[in-house]
Length: 213
Image (cartoon, rainbow, N blue to C red; front, side, top):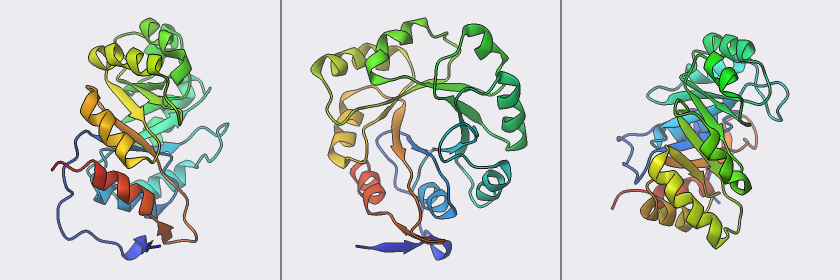
């Protein structure tokens, strides 16, 4: 197993282009932030809602963000009010927010940054009720995808900016990127073994599988 010491990690060349843009969710350490940004991820999310597991305080998010450049920074939120989301977004200079649950159109209109919304794979019918102002949809797929789910994703991907989460499965990720008209793919970040020490084998396999030949 190859362990990366991310504090000393540096790329000597530009990231290789990928088939689709990549969104890495739940960044909670500097190792992941620098590695994913350096490998060509387009968007990184930080959980900022204190009611959600693994949330970070604003000081930590700002410290992590100060080490990276060239990526879109997104805050993940659950049930916080629009006022609270706007305040945290301003403090952390977020580019957008990702809501774990749909909101009413009135609530969405009160949120200042662009909004991405996570939709459960078993609740795809809810997509039709979302306003066109939503910047993108994020759907995390189950380990096994039913044929009807795959079929239902086709018209969504054709009409909405859709980000699919295939899990850390390289071949599955490449197939989805090749078969559907996606805005991008979503992958989970991870945890350090200890500060500066992180196993990136799974993420690295995904990045490599999505490289443009």
